Every structure is written in structure tokens, then in C-alpha cells.
Length: 381
Image 1 (cartoon, rainbow, N blue to C red):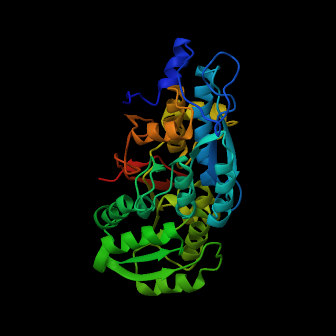
Image 2 (image 1 turned 180 degrees about the vertical axis):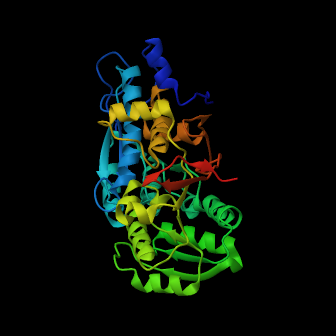
Image 3 (image 1 turned 120 degrees about the horizontal axis):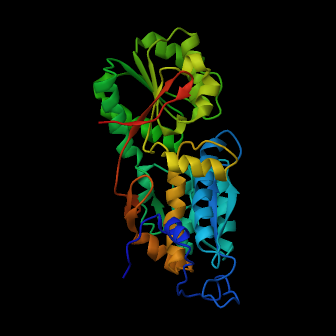
């Protein structure tokens, strides 16, 4: 039996000046209990798995910084049962993530994982984490197929590409009133999956299609295809580094239509790569919620003044799902996994309840670039 708690439990306890104690079980493969008289084991850890350096570092840092806010709140409320979070930098590379997953699994003091951050690395590590019974909660892995493998350990607090793609198509048809859309993807598991969903949703409105590669810098062949197609809108499935360069080269070639992309491009790095003039007018969609003022204040205080970014609030939610379980006395991998599988509470970004690992609440937002900045997102209706 599981009681329902809100994700604000740690903050509420801190405000009340209370220290939470609870009973839990341990075994020889888990952290040893401390000698303080508390049932809380010493040395409890969460891991963060995702990019911290490299071309896609911004997205990973947004998430880990958001998780840090949750961790700080929890530790202030629970000084007798502190938890640390160890980062594992995958650079968004599934091959690196696979090696790091082995390290995480072998460290028995780690009882939960915030992440993996990207769909490719989530797919590459899912079997290993499931075999180890180690719960993972991703803030940003959106490939719909990730919850079709029978894993009981994989969870995400964000909607999938299967939810986002139809809303992108709806925006292009109803709001942008596009007549001819050229669809491009970066050949990644995430980018191609999202773009394929958009292609399906647009049907006969797709006037052309192309694929590029991650880390590509010269998009002249694709730009020529777009400009010769007569497209009045472009959708790009991929990440901000390439999306920005593609937009810059499209504008330089005289393309004046709408540029649209998904959550992988929702980052100031998109504007930096494209240049403010070229980026202005772009629309970037995301299943991620805009940051609320209270969270923004805490985030900046805990992260040296940095502004929250894409999936920062979801990173907070992902960590808090597990931290509230620890606060309730779930100190082993098995107990924390059971807690997360039965979680049902209000989060910062949405109500969080998992159905086979997928979160039940779905909202897709459209973020416009205006004045060289990404404006707050608005739900697509």
C-alpha cells in the first residue's frame, strides 16, 4: 500500500521545521546503516546520466541543475538522511552511456537515476538498468518505443514524440497555415522519430524531405532542396547545434518562410548558432513547461545565477519523485523502484502518475523566438 504525497513534501517539511524519519530495509548489497540511531543508511546516492560537456551539454546541464534544486530542498528538510547526486557525463552518446551505466549499476550506494537524458542513451542502457532493478526517471527522453521493451525500471516525466508530432502538424496547418512543408531530420533516434511523426501528421502538405547528420556543419545541399521546393515552412527534427546552423544557412540563401523545430532545439544555443536575426520568428515546440517564478528564483540561487532552461523543471520533478520516496523510507533499489512505479502526486510541471513508465498528463507548448530570445511557451490547442 502506498500513500499519495505531493512533490512539495520536502519543502513543506522544511518550512515546518520537521525532520522526517522513516523505516526502511537494507541488505548487504546496499549502503550500510549509519550509526546515528536513524534507520536511514549513510551514503545514499542518486546518479545523473546525460550530457554535461560536448555539443549537447546545455540540455543535460539544464536537467541536472533542476535536479540540484530538488536535492537541496530535500537535504535541508532531512538533515539526518542526506542524499547526494553523482553526475555521469555521457555527452549524449549512447556508447559512452552504456559504459557509464555499468559503473552506475556497480555502485551499490546509487539507488536511483535521474535520466538518461537522451532517447538514444535511454535505449542503449535500458536492458542493463532493468536487469539490475535500478529505477530511472528521465526528464527528456521522448522516443515512444522506450516504453515498449517490457522494462519495469524506465520512467519519464515528459510526453513522447508520438504526443508532440501531431501537435506540431496541427500548429503548422492551423496556426501557421502552411501550404508546403519541407521536413528534415538529423538521422538520430530522436530526430528521425519526431520528424517521421510530423511527416505522417502533415500528409500531402509535405513538399520535400531530407536527412542530415549530427555534427554536420555544411547544409548547402539541403538548403538548395528547400529553396527549390517552394516550401513556406520547414520542420527540423534534431538538436540545437545543427538546427541553428541550418537556419543561418537557409536565411543566407534567401529562405523567408517559417522555421520550426522540436524540443531538441529549444535552447539559447539555437540562437547563438543561427544568429539573432536568422533565429527570429522560429517556433520551437516542447512537451516541457515554462519555468514558474518561484522555481526560477530557487534555480538561480542554487545554480550561480543561471536561468532555468529546457527540461530544468522536469529535472526537478524527476529527482523529486525519487527523493520523496527516500523521505518515506525507501532506501533500497527494490523499494524505491516500487515507490516510483506506484507514484501518483502533483508535480511542479504536471500531475505525475506512470502508466507503463509513461506520464499520464500531456501538454505540448510552442515557444517563439522574438527579439533574439526564446519567449515563454504557450500550449498548442
